[in-house]
Amino acid sequence: MKIEIKDENNFEDESKNTVDNFKRSKHITVGKDYNFIPKNIFFKIASFLLYCIAYPILFLYDKLVFGLKIKGRKNLRKIKGAKITISNHINILDVSFVSLANFPNPLYFPTIKSNLEIPFVSILVKLLRGLPIPNTFEGKRAFYNVIEDLLKRNKSIHFYPEGSLIPYHDKIRKFKDGAFDFACSYHVPVIPIVYTYREPKGIFKYIKKKKCITLNVLEAVYPEKDDKKYVEEFKNMVYHKMNTFMDENNYKS
Image (cartoon, helix red, strand yellow):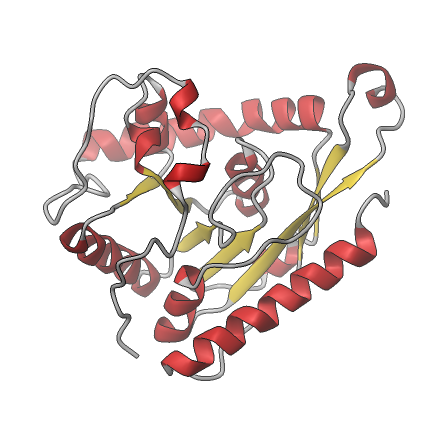
């Protein structure tokens, strides 16, 4: 199935994010010639080193600040080839949660273009394999080609099908089509990840005001067809799976 490039945003919605709280240092244009994944050796080395350095720091930070607990990591490790992970979007740093769950395998993730216009943050996002989401037809065509190439090279890509961030939201919101279009078109599994919350216990009772976060990796869901009509059915199937899990497991230890 050939993916149709649509006018509307099928991924994250820039207008609903809070990036404008940061001062932008530049404006980037994500067009047909944008270099999504630099191939020079210095970038690759810097990206690898940052990933290795960031892992222990993020592990400690996410554990201490968010009380992060990861469950079901075996469901990621069972998939040897390309995969698409998706999750509800509940924290500005939740892509780091997924990266920890997926370690040592690197994770690519589409992100709003504005994140690559913020001083220093833009460098980190790029080195940590963030892919800016274009808002032009030619840019989208190039972006889709990059996603296709990554999946053909058995890489892992994380999407936020809800399209925007709502901190500590305790419901699964309506999904956009993007991740499911790719999964059906390239016959790759979707691994749902659901963030649930639990009451702070032990030392966390004294240092945390908000709930602790649990990352739950569910079993992979495989698309059965690659036609456009099936994308909606597949999306709803995964949504129901995640929504049911959220309802049954939220606020449990």
